[in-house]
Amino acid sequence: MAQGFGNPKGPHYGLGRINVAASGTPAPLNQNFSTNEPFAKSGTVPLTANTIIFAASPTNTGVTFVVWKTTGAGIGNLNSIIKPLNPGETWTLTTAFPGNLFSLTAYGIDANNAGDGVYVSAVVI
Image (cartoon, rainbow, N blue to C red; front, side, top):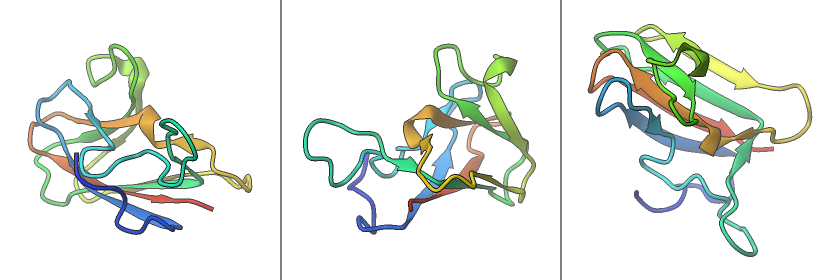
């Protein structure tokens, strides 16, 4: 895992391209950057966001998936799939609630084909 967020003061955190190494094994969103709160006073505190933007790479050769990162998660477990993304498709997970409800550690990326990926950004309010 690389260094902390490129912009530790937010509110926009680019997590880069999350690449899937093996189909059926979700890649975590912390593949390139830590998804822990950069200003936690003690311990490890997962960063939460008001909005998470998922943009499938237009060069993908198949469908990628936003999945719950739980035991048995991945495209083999249909209950863990939140949103399939076709190449070049963008999906935004957001809430109108004025808070950061989405934990970045709860989500992962899977794909039909190894090497496909999704660009991920988080907005913290």
